[in-house]
Length: 230
Length: 230
Image 1 (cartoon, one colour):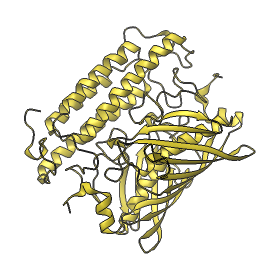
Image 2 (spheres, each protein chain N blue to C red):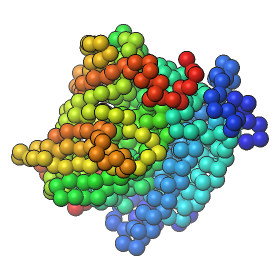
Image 3 (cartoon, rainbow over the protein chains, first blue to last red):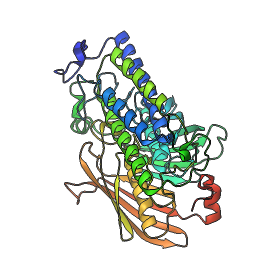
Image 4 (cartoon, rainbow over the protein chains, first blue to last red):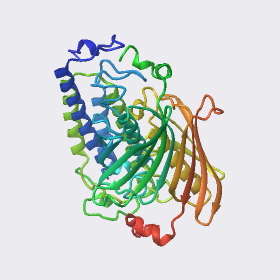
């Protein structure tokens, strides 16, 4: 990059928060690239193009990756565009609009819970035509974490019991729901479900989870990337 | 594409199996593109490039996606390069070398079980520096399915109990194990675990699952994409 932003320079280890307008433009650009990458991912897992075409596209992909230079965040480093904990995570593999992996799941906070909506693509396929069982677990684990946060007790998953009643269709609008059912000390009990938007009464996948809010010292030890952030 | 292969043409709805050499070249090209896409995904979720760079790369990505024309498989259509059920799945979001989402997990069949190895990247991040809990579920759900197949009873997940003992580090070689512990009728009980390669005795995540082998008629109804395939 010829004109790196000061707080994105390679020498900055704890970038300060960008100004609001700048942050908005950065997030919009990240989401735009995320969208195009999701379209490319979909094309790549669906195409039956011949080997020479695939190799040519692979060369093009390599060239593009080389353009994403400048500061590359290290493992455990929280991106300057994120609000962690408890807010926007641009690159989350579940909710991140900047993630090529995410459906992405759009989340709405509820009272003691959260609702999510998304459409899975062929890239998320397990059995032909249906989502991978692990993708269902990702959607539920994530949304159940949001439900904990909605009660003021953001936490990490301790256990997750998944029950697969019916396969989850690809390319169909899905509704994910999560509700906190109780809490003991720092331990939070949460339930979750996946249905299609068309039939909210037929549960495809159900989950019960236990989450635990780490104490502040433990959280700091686990997430050194938080550094001096709030 | 100027020279589509006959069985990859847009009018072919049930492509015949490519010859072995051709299949090898096709799979190699798919894996090459998959590799470059995973590198691009990693760069995209790590870069702090300025908005103009991100938009320029997004334009390049859109141009590349448009080159993957010709036959695009429909939802539930099994790719001609796959062996389903029970074999290679090039685009699996867990094991597929052609998947931009997959680590990918490399699987070895064991007696009544399976072993897997992989390295998670920042694209798979949940808590800063660690894998998303749903990614652990994906790895285990997938490998436990392989363990069922290793006993001659490939099945679908009915329930999966995940226990998260410790966070799973990114950018570290991981070992995933799964073993069948029992069966009743078409129901198979399986256990699984994730450890680092460095410390195989410390379980990070443990799982217990129940899988069910569908009867042939049910399988055909669930997976019409199998068509007349073997």
